[in-house]
Structures are given as structure tokens and as C-alpha cells.
Image 1 (cartoon, helix red, strand yellow):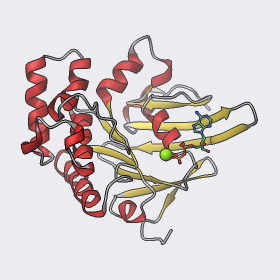
Image 2: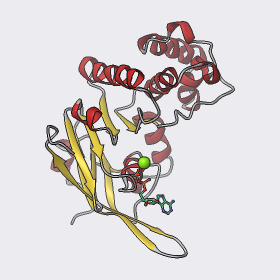
Image 3: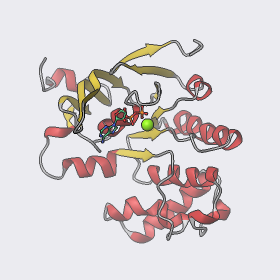
Length: 242
Ligand SMILES: Nc1ncnc2c1ncn2[C@@H]1O[C@H](COP(=O)(O)OP(=O)(O)O)[C@@H](O)[C@H]1O
Ligand SMILES: [Mg+2]
């Protein structure tokens, strides 16, 4: 298997490709193979779900797709480039500019207001402070939090926190948004309104999403769902009862 993409392959390639990813966790007691030759193509504009049992390696795969963790072997290609074999600084830039992350427990900074949390990735990326705040305000309006700009996370509901996290993940206009069980900590109403926002962003601006979930209902509301089982990926018919 070639470890680079040919020029022809790269120009027609998906937005993000995982090729033969192997991830092994080595602890004192045992060797745990979590991903054993996992491959996945994500096209621009996809609204893709990854399902799988608890412990099947969904978070591990998502972290590797977003360059947060490295596999023992295999490649992640972003727009045809192997993200783990680029020059210094590429990976940091990829994580900050090209990918947005949403986590189950929001990961907001508790001492900062909603608008400051949302602006943070833009400031880390050295963008103009005033412009970043303006964009943060616009994004918070977009996710329905116009009246909560100056609230800190402690004064927001779970559903509101996750919408702040979604706005934060969008501020650098990522090519791809990776969400790890984003509704896992929300009640049904908040989950549904969060997913409605996701679908709307996908529909209106073509935002690409990869959403890890163990919710069958959520998976069925997406365009395509893949199953991670025994370290490999397979497509699932989303009408199937899991
Ligand atoms: N840093 C680590 N060291 C050792 N084992 C780990 C580590 N991270 C995850 N694991 C193990 O790898 C497996 C997959 O974990 P994870 O990707 O979090 O699964 P999922 O998100 O599908 O629940 C689990 O059995 C977990 O205990
Ligand atoms: Mg997980």
C-alpha cells in the first residue's frame, strides 16, 4: 500500500481519508488493539455518523481523524496530504484552522463568557480581537443564543453550553467538524434542537460533519452511518434496527 497519494488521486480525493489505521494501547498488563486497519472516506458536505459499542474505539478514531492523536501505522489524508508527515507546525494549524471539535462534556472555559469562549480559537489563531468578537457574536446569534452572549458556562443549561461549543468549533470556518457524542449529556429536547442546528448548517452552508454517537435515533437522522466494530469500519443501512 502506497503511503503517499499520487497527484491524480489527490485532486479527486475525499476531503479526509483514513487509510489502514492501526491503534494499539500498550498498558502494563496488556496490549489492546483498538483500530486494526480502519479505513474511511469523508467527502466535503458529508453528514456522517459513526456508531459502535462503548469501548469500540469511536473516540480514538475521531481523535486520530482530527490530528489529536497518532496511530501506530496508517495515514490520515486531508485534501490529499498526509497530516502526520508534513513539516513542523502543519498539525497545529490543521487542528486550529481546518478542524472543529465538539465534545460530550462541552469543554468550555468556566471563567470566560459565551462570547469569549467562542472567540478563543480565533484569538489562538492570532486573528484580530475585535473581528473575532464580532464573529463570535454572529455565531452565537446563529445558534440561538443572542440573549446569552455574556453568560458564563455555569449560568447556561447543558443544551446552551453545547450550542456555545458548536459556535466555538465554527469560528475558524473549519472544513470539517468532528463531534464526539455531542448529545450524550443532553435531554431529548436539547438533543433534538442541537441536531436540527447541525442539519441546518449542513444543508445551508454545506458544513461537513462527522458525528460519533450511540443514539440510533440520531444516527438515523444523518445522511450516512458507519459502524465501528472489531477495529474496522463498515457501512450500515440507517433503517436497520441496531
Ligand atoms: N490512553 C489509553 N490507554 C489505554 N487504553 C485506552 C486509552 N484510551 C482508550 N483506551 C481503551 O481503548 C478502547 C477504546 O476507547 P474509546 O476510543 O474511548 O472507545 P469509545 O469512544 O468507542 O467508547 C477502550 O477499551 C478504552 O478503555
Ligand atoms: Mg467515546
